[in-house]
Length: 280
Image 1 (cartoon, rainbow, N blue to C red):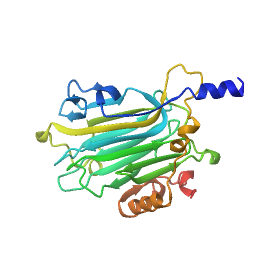
Image 2 (cartoon, one colour):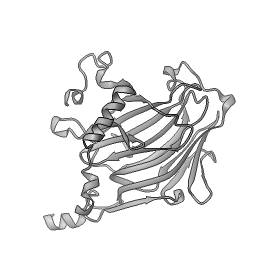
Image 3 (cartoon, one colour):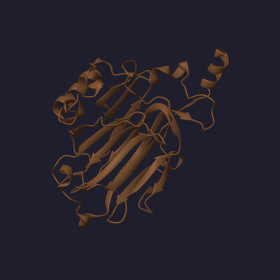
Image 4 (tube, rainbow, N blue to C red):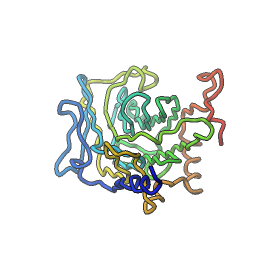
């Protein structure tokens, strides 16, 4: 294929900025009525009871972009529950970028659990306590994914960065389209204090709320002969990385609110930490 022809195919990608009407952007996928889009499509709720949780996914697949979602998590005693919000590809050897909110006893902080899979390999967990009450109001949770960086942010403050280090032999998700997924489910065998605190079903149904979905992302169209790519007009978004003030905010979060980092868990990796941990 000639360079000119290939370029014209690559520019077929549709870069969209969408949001506002959840009926247009999201599909409820499971839960037998426990997931609901309300009113004119400006609010979505997931619920969990003793019999089932619920979930949704984006109607589009994307290859690179930034996804924002405002969420209000389960109030009160949410121990044992997990509210997950993540990018994921389909099939074996998946790519995935995870945000999972692990419920806790009333008065204890929520735990934000993050992980990154590339070509089926994960084991890159980092966990944080949030510096606010995520059940009192909506907050914006964002995942930026581009060819060089993954950045997970809360209210515009980065909490985690993962850079493309393929030149060092470290897999990076960049060739497979992903959808946005979210689910609310029971994981009391591990979610709260390693499974010591179980779900109190007398408080069910547990409800998490969502609004203001925004995708500044490149839509993948099935059957395209070439991967979705980005035109020069949109190159700034897709080469975006953390500027010095953002790096300082990232260091602040990790210094004050990180409670687990796989890169410091020598007991878990007795034969040596993963190679990305030694790359500054």
